[in-house]
Image (tube, rainbow, N blue to C red):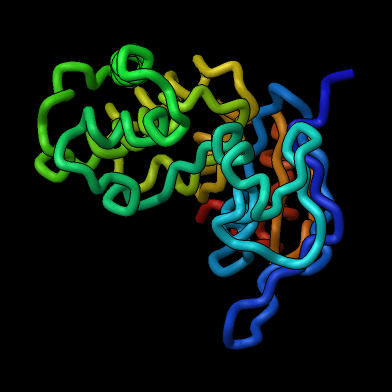
Length: 237
């Protein structure tokens, strides 16, 4: 049986205004699984994703490969869980693409030579090596998305968590993203409204609505259940 990559027990989270965003989430994700998390707007999907490496912190227990997500372990946890934000401008803040992708490995304390190797490898995987010396903010949206993925790959994570990875991508770059995600063998957690991407990338789907898990099963079963999708405002028109 595969090792538990993610184990969540009784996770609750409320926004500062008191709104409950997550209500008693309990969930296991095995090493190497590719899991799509879907649900209507405001369901708590992104909030859950940001709990995985401590960006947000709720009440309850989360373990990543047996290590508890708590402040004293953040360095280790963030080396294991790479989060790719929906908006790449929230991820890219350094003078050049190289600097953005090197940021994580440098903070892991790697030697300069190792950092360079990690940057080149990550940018090669996302087909952005020629942009290495460019400024991230001069890139197209699709290029920024790919560099954002590279900033996570350079840390060699065991889990990659992506928030709406296909949003605002043109068809060509969306297809490229799907191929890229399918080339990864690490555990993948994908929050998205893009059900077609989920069908091509994920073997398992979880529906979250109003902060609770309302369905969890094989992607094919859930994505073909039109009544279930409609109930959660996920059915195509």
